[in-house]
Length: 428
Image 1 (cartoon, rainbow, N blue to C red):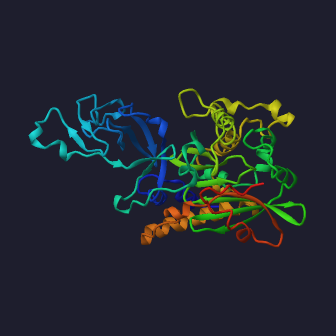
Image 2 (image 1 turned 90 degrees about the vertical axis):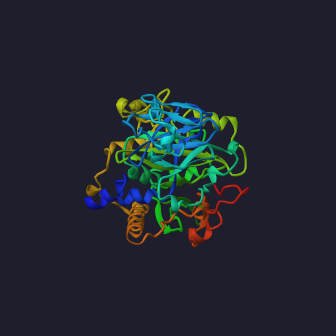
Image 3 (image 1 turned 120 degrees about the horizontal axis):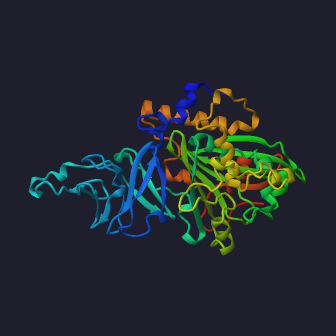
């Protein structure tokens, strides 16, 4: 249980807040590469950490992420013309480059140099692994580029989507590090979803509904081990890495692609739920990609032309009570992604954690909260660089394996938890 002030501390990520300052230490997913597909294509509105921004690709292919509003009269530059290496406001013609620098004020003489005095807030934007990443912190403290494995393998080995989730980032992320709910909420999908079925480890999720959690700190965040009973004096371990502040990896199943999430705040009451799938040693098959595009696995179906899920709170997530009663889905909601999102959104825009009653399976969540608060305070008090900024902290991999009962998972799974180029994931 958290006090209200602790809950506020963790949930608020706007400019100047402790958690907002923490997030601004990291490279974060901002858009999919497909959203800016070509030079001089239409700009895209972006809202992150409570800031309204605009992304565009100029005539030379350079990427920009700038303040959404013109410095003249506050018009949204989303209406602007993307042309001749800049975005021109349609109201009075002021023009900005990808760095937010005003390069033309038609009403003022060029020789006056007035345009050079005007500059919008801007952030770097880089294209890596099908994702456009941004860093919103102090330019002098910009860290090296991210090195998460899903974004560094060849593009034919990775697939990423995003969706709007209508709740605070923290309750969404906490769902991502909670392995105990799999045996209940997702049990119907373990045998039916093409991106999950057939894995030998699925039976352990169904046979043991009371996993024991062992959580240890890692350099970048936490390793959250969920232990279930298996045959031959073994335990079945599912190990979830959490890299601060908002990266989670879902333990794999068989040779299916590995998947996981980023949970990036839009504002205090909504977030972007990023979902990735990749395979470290082979290209994704046409069947796998088709399933992902069809909303299988951790992905979702969309309202056409948007990144809002087709199943959403306005239509009660297309709840199917008949399927629930028949056992096809445990909650009556179709799809793993929306099964998670529906329950996380049901807590309200910001969960009231003063009313919680936590148990042993929540140890990962408890430790993540404390590690976030410690890191934010150390950043504020001493300027300490938080865990997860260093790209070496990104080279972690989720794992699912059998170990003898007398072997600690942090020792027995040590090699399996390191992302190594050309080495297959450890999974049963």
